[in-house]
Length: 67
Image (cartoon, rainbow, N blue to C red; front, top):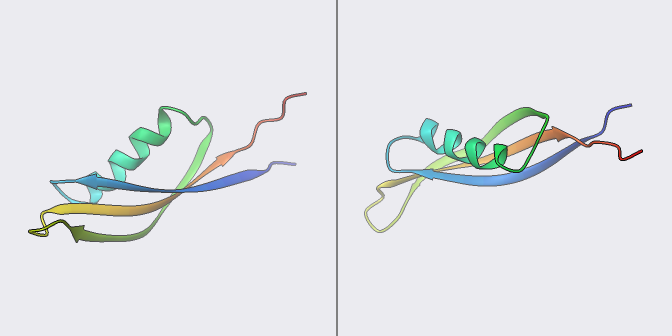
């Protein structure tokens, strides 16, 4: 039986909300294997001049057994 773990991340970009999602996913891929899903929880603008896009995402990945 497969077990999936979900973590939450926030990516940022000066370009777009889509790029902020891709930034979060790229960072997750550096340390996680078997990523099965990315769900975008929310996006928005942040910063003093509202110039930074942020994306709150949930990343689901398979938990590996160490048998």
